[in-house]
Image 1 (spheres, rainbow, N blue to C red):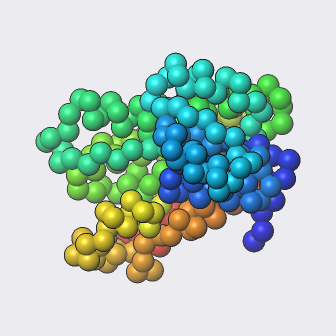
Image 2 (cartoon, one colour; image 1 turned 90 degrees about the horizontal axis):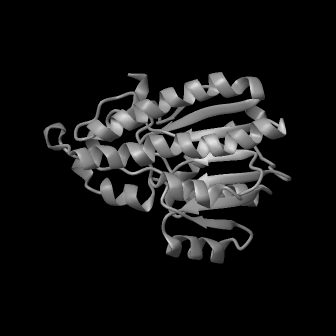
Length: 244
């Protein structure tokens, strides 16, 4: 299925690496004018070398005031992908207040904030739009050492539903994708141990982890008019992990 986003402007957070970077590049290839947001300038520099048409924004989304300032003049946005997230894994009994706050600041509060900024513009223009939040299978299945991460993604799923409910009347659709382990550079590093990988793979009926393109393709579908009646869903991209 070919997607065209010609004439659309898209904003992607966490666009420096992994899924976010691949999503930004895919949207640009499909004709969108892309605003790429990340906190690491070096990642933006390399992204611009790969795709000079992208507009870079360097900001730490955990900083509410800095985000407000960085995005206030970003202009009209039709498509938003909230991909930025952090994963700090600790046993439940060792979770600290700082680790909890950092995770919720980026994984939940920043999504709410960026979406508010973008959706206010969508509402004011009356042109509608589409938002995709990148969640995880961890929103729906407990994983050892993932107490805070699971909690943030569970919160993100419910935030997505409320956004869909309140923004739908303005023709703004909001959905999320919920991948299993994804073979980004970080994913390969974290799951290269065959014994560790075997435990997770044994629960995936398709018998493999997701590739970045699997998540990108699902995201493009949810952003596109091909899914114009899809609103408020959590779409597993997990090979069937959540089926049992």
